[in-house]
Image (cartoon, rainbow over all chains, first blue to last red):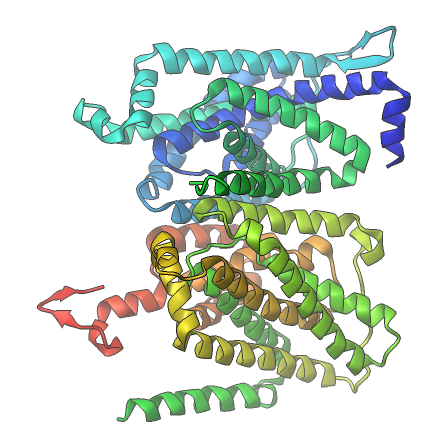
Length: 299
Length: 326
């Protein structure tokens, strides 16, 4: 708790933490959008979300090792993960789409263990990073430092988000996806091939997770076990913001990034993961009690 | 043959085999002790997941609480080995029940997938907290005291301890499912709103069921901590990625919502897992992940579910024409 005192003594530290947290939060936005998309359209909670992020990170790392600058690695990682997501849907996910939610949770949980252990077996448990060669920015006469890479990944996350929004609003497939989310049966009657559309949805989800993974590989490190916290963060952001609310997801993600950063500083880095998972429980219980007062349940 | 006599001879046969196993196959005592622990896992998970419809991914929380509480008591109480062990098991069980009762009203109000993911978070958060808490050894782990008896006595002792926990769990749940409590939690699974409208105090039933699971999981946790001889926060105590998933998988594999299903699932799964560990060294976890996906996707009804579907009349279900009534 000494660090809490430190925060009051040096307010500029709060600015630093807040700024860092918001920049980090932008990376959380992407898998959260993916989860909301898959959940809303396919009625499936994908626990393997974080593993898609992890695999995207490995793609970016191997591209970097092959001599491609990480910034160009982001679209390539998204493209490769799009194909991977498509293959995953065609091999496994299509079998669980119309099953009940528990089956899909457990199946994607198995998928998450499978992918994480495969990555561990194939790439090793070592920590890898894609070095981007960016420097550090100094603000407020050097009292606040911002790694340029975080700024770059913030911008990249915003670009990826804008691309997704454009696709969902303007592209014909995007419009079909939104129609299916509103009413799957009506969309089918209007001639939407829902199976192909689900494949697209899952592949797009994998692509934005892949882009997020590339950003993670640039900003921090990748290792086979980084997945689950990203799944939990995405889930948390989505239940906080609600399924259909695009702007709220964005705000919740940035808020979570900032909250996590403050918690990591005050409680110590070893409790940061515990904070994320504990916050999930707190948010769920809080939502349950606030709805319970109106005699409703979280569904 | 008389079905009551058949059932009796089945129980007697299992009991005799279980009691004689350490003498018949002394080399496999530890593996067989783990088999009993697995049966406790599957049975206690099925109490919520199968019978009550609340699919928990975080029941490993209570296992870890029992393990740590027992080890702390053994370390700090200053009693002899056996008094400390049994007292520790009792205290661990009480603590786990208290935690379950405390969390119950908050967590069990969550429905379906929210409960599943909330409990997943709970289990992992516990592991992370234990990994940072100096009092219980933090990341360096804890070592329970050494077993005082003769060489080889340790394996037999823990074999019978785990057997006793599993047998009590089975007998208790069998008694529980046969009565009003079983009907009540089945009603909650089938339609919670209707059950509440019928006047069932659903929250009480749900919390009680969770406390019962917590009790037996904590007992088995205390035994396992001593049996392994080393407690790591993420790998043994709050091992969500291994024990925590296996308990769900075993219950589903055997057929959830039945009494014998989790037992059969645990036996089949434990054998498969030991074979994986022996023959697929290094890739066993990949194979396990694959196994989860395959079982859940292709075989969600489980072994007993399949048997019930195949020969419904053997289980006292009416069959009209060729159509199977559920």
